[in-house]
Image (tube, rainbow, N blue to C red):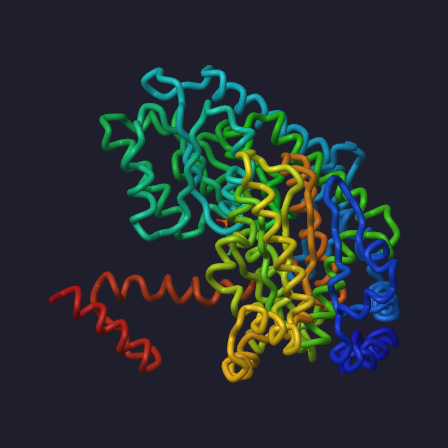
Length: 547
Ligand code: F6P
């Protein structure tokens, strides 16, 4: 029996499930203060969780559950560098990377702030040299294009942030990303580039990830093929990694390697030198603004009482909707075009962290942990999958994210965009019942026979939970705060579920099998110790390629 499910607050919450499922969210607004109680403003972000099936007593019990799970103690343990990544025996210190207060942070007795600040300084010097044209290509030409080669946490963060903050870029540097081992991606990126003006950033914490190493080798061959000799690698390749030996073996010099540490998880690493493409694209000052925004959110998470703590609120809505009410999927729906890649970013952050089924002691957990995170730009989603959100028979809680001011104001557009944001959250909660449908269709002159036939199809049950996040304006600082908000949400959920959010053993088996299968595809000799389906599929692939 899991210790968490035995906690008094967990048991009390179990007793509240039926009422929550039977009570329309809309009826909770009989309390005229509900919006004020369940919305708060933090770091230029208004967070409203009032459209959730959470009444005051449930909210208090959820907070109580967090306390009974020692949330505050475990939060402090993370910030203080304790080895909370228990299966890898590591500290978890992405917060130290953006510790703009510069107070010491100890890992195993050593203050890590000096090495973090040293690395940030190296990044600043390098970024300024490239952007001001002091760092040049092998033939003396200025660098105009940066290609980040990395995958997962070494790709998604910089890819998402550079897209989100495009309006802050000054066009000195063009930025490109290559993550997939499908040759099309790198071929497409290289096609438009001049080798004399390209800088490749090979980003890989381990420097062993097969996709990244394959793409880096292809980029190197491409450079060599343009009549450069191997000395050119020094001017056109830099690395971000914690594996200095492998970086050197690839041919990148130590002085062109930016360090990261084992206490920075890949999916939490954009604050480290993994953020180098962000700084190259936007300039170092904007990168520092991003760090500052995240640091401000860290301070909020550490210092504000749990009752008025934004990451807590976000986590508790997911905990209640998913683990207790059985709504295991969650949509992330930005109404802010620059946040186009935000749901893909959060998908890795949340699902790789909390997609676990054993607790920290290795015992199977008897409740559902991480949600299925998915989504895309809200407006486009409205014309694709919102039908399912409104009338599907699975309820999908959703986070709506928009801004007061557009990043790229064009007359008449932003109000239309945000009208949809408000309309959708209203429709999802309030729905429309048979009487209203009847009244509406009667006013349009439809025959009563047709009306009665259509009513069941037009009813929206409503009662679908949403969170609303409204940013003042999508600036580097606000984006930093927004990302940190979700990072802490992930930590809180992992703490309450009592799982280790900071390892990712589940990605290993597939990697190992792919390594074993590759030589079989290359030689055409398919071994017979695969399961029948896989062996036949591989044989088909090999045979088709021969014919
Ligand atoms: O396969 C998953 C993963 O290990 C992620 O956790 C990580 O972000 C990604 O691969 C890339 O790893 P690396 O930075 O070591 O290349």
